[in-house]
Image 1 (cartoon, rainbow, N blue to C red):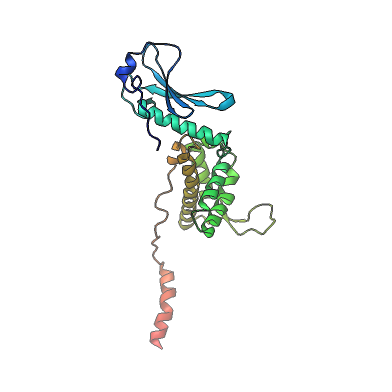
Image 2 (tube, helix red, strand yellow):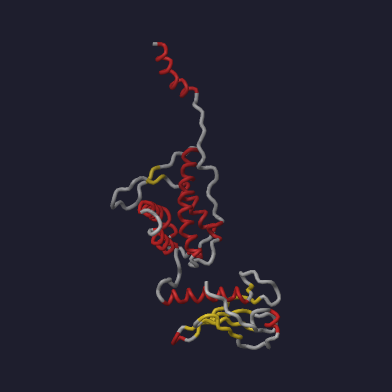
Length: 260
């Protein structure tokens, strides 16, 4: 991690309180081409980052409120050191965007899936990557692929999860078929439990891709999918007792064996 820069006039709230209020920020250079600015208003101040973009001049981004009157929380209120860290993260992302390493524009579920598959290809066995791709292609991309990740909602994801749990079971489809082959799901407890267990496994695969997108700063929040919980008690072994007819059918061959 880069070493934090020092600036006696901006480091503490006491020092900043002595600065006259003005319309332009007080800047401190914290890295090559990167400055952290402090805007001193009539009340508490705020932080801005300023990144040099060559012939395009400086690009500025608001970081958040300064801890002039309340303690920093690292989310909306920042001290001098936290504001530096936020500025460096933003500047690094700007550098990656300029280099074409990070895409700009709407980031869709399909993009998150492609990034996820590309990244796990270097981490997992080919069979695992192939299995994940099948799940994405069969259950996730058809319904969610075109949705912008930041526009996902808990309600939308819950409806998608429930749809998987109630749809007919998929069968192996012939190559070139217009639509996937399905088989009606029996209306009994075992079948419903099995479909819910399948929905849980597919949800886990989707969350893996979305979580990776969130931790890589490609999504602004993980709240929508974090709130979607798997179905409960669907992976437990089902205990069922034999009916009288089943018991007799099982027992009769045994009795004949001993009677002979």
